[in-house]
Image 1 (cartoon, rainbow, N blue to C red):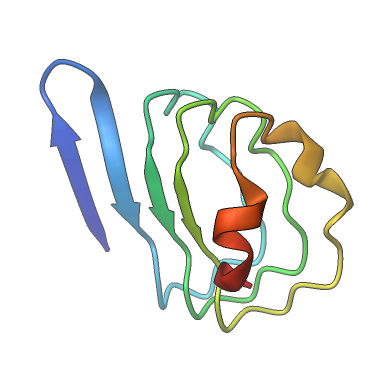
Image 2: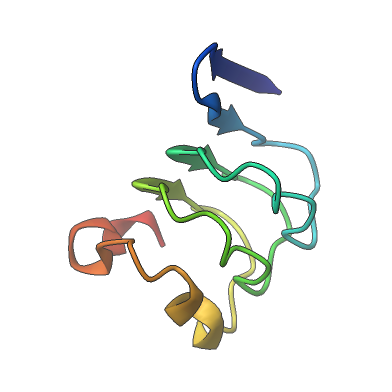
Length: 86
């Protein structure tokens, strides 16, 4: 697990790869997060991310994604540029 912070804006980068995570949760206070890597976990749904308004990079490769209906909560995220993350 790798977490990188900027002293002025809080946590900006989190790499939670290879942690057997099944559900995205507990990120609601990380409102300054810009880069979130969740590679190689057990995530099946994108959820609980609507507070991540600064997110620019989302890496979800090698998960069990079956449901993408909640991606609308990431209103500032440019999906056309990041679609390859799936």
